[in-house]
Image (cartoon, rainbow, N blue to C red; front, top):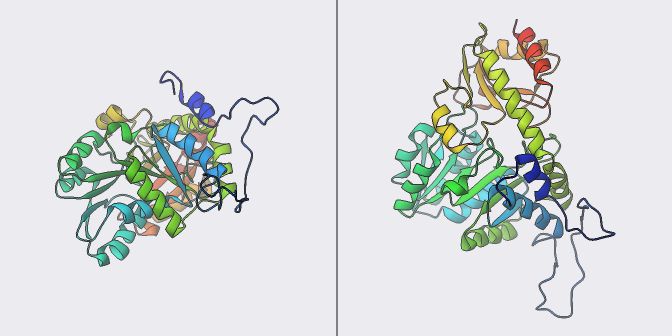
Length: 367
């Protein structure tokens, strides 16, 4: 796709259909699970929906286009995508690095399912990831890390992994392919939850893997076939339907997140603010070098848990929700899920409300 296009144009073009007179402009849902078989048993036609289907292929082509990948594979959730990749690349005797400050369920999966198979699991904070990678066979990085929003140097990390023949997998959920493209910085695979900003309406769960190494992608596809963590054909259509507006939505989310971060860092009720787009944020320099946009998440610390709940209760616009990337601005107190953060730590996911309305509402709720 022409690199001169903006993100909204890229999003629209990625989901575009072939121009055939008399055929629909937009993709249509194809929820079939079973297909008529051909007498020619060598003919490569669809036979069963768990193997492949037109709905997946349309969505996978769009996701690959946005990630700058040769191919993409859809899954029933972001965790399904991550665990499928780990089953493929992490073998007994290997050392696997996972982020200690990233999504907590990944750490649990590594401890409960990888470690008992004789896999050495190392938890490393984002700032320590490059050092830990020097002795690893597989590195799973998340950048910006959820929920603290630290950033890892992906190019340096990729070079470290490559020097010892390791595999680098990058969770691109928080940044989205509209914010950064890890494959272009040296990652072997991208994993992500399409539940968040890409689908963006808080009404479905989906995930994907993207990459450009045929053998690696074929192994992940085989695991998906045998393990069955598939995405429903109708959900695939819903993601594809939503993807066309992702550029517009993500642009507003990033705009609102930046405006919130600027306002919140000077508010007396807020103890600290993290947002990679702030010039004085510890991750800003690195984020500026590898991210096109800084994302729709802002992390803050208030006095305690009660202050976080009061913020939502006093607001007319904020909702309490643990997912992110939707059209509504949401707040999640992360300590409730066991994240190693202060009781008043909250992750704010900026929605697509008018920026001035959102700022007034949050400031009034804090005051």
